[in-house]
Length: 68
Image (cartoon, rainbow, N blue to C red; front, side):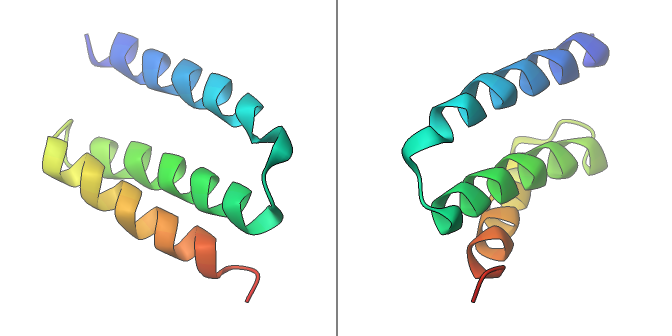
């Protein structure tokens, strides 16, 4: 079951990132950071919703600050 969930999350991220064509570099980095952070948080907490959301928030903040 977890393998299918991870594959689904990866597919959604790839489709979501294709919508980044009109975004600035900072917006794109924020979105990518949130996606990677959400997946990492989910993996580290074994699918916990709180871990996923926390990871997405932290990843988004880091992605937003990369180009400063």
